Length: 163
Ligand SMILES: Cc1cc2nc3c(=O)[nH]c(=O)nc-3n(C[C@H](O)[C@H](O)[C@H](O)COP(=O)(O)O)c2cc1C
Image (cartoon, rainbow, N blue to C red):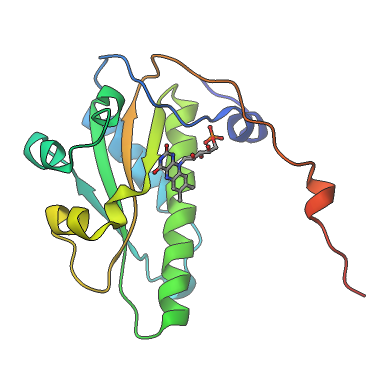
């Protein structure tokens, strides 16, 4: 499935339940590769990806086991010398994350973004070193169910104009 970018952005949904179709590794690594064209300051490419295997996944004790997703990844953002640069890294990895979600969605694959990886006990399970931020843990798979879009505030209400 190929859709124009605006349609891809609008139709992406958080998916919380997946069917049991596997995703070949070469496909999700291709989406990660594409995601790496995200903007990033000084080309520091601050993303690191953890591929979460069954043992680690069980230890995370996620309430729905990531909806039965065939692939579970965590995205980390690298440490930096200053808080300013660390924030920049988080922003760049968030761009990476959205690129990945859109690339997957274009292929008919959905994702569940869970923020639980940032909790101290989950950081320990993932073996995350000090100074890294966990941007999310992502369950990835073919949707068993796609919810309707949640309505958004009209953008005009979010725009302020400066003189
Ligand atoms: C930084 C971030 C963290 C999120 N963490 C969670 C989470 O822990 N659990 C969850 O159910 N959804 C989580 N979400 C997904 C949001 O709930 C979801 O994007 C929002 O409800 C809008 O729905 P949509 O993605 O289908 O448009 C997270 C999204 C972001 C951007």
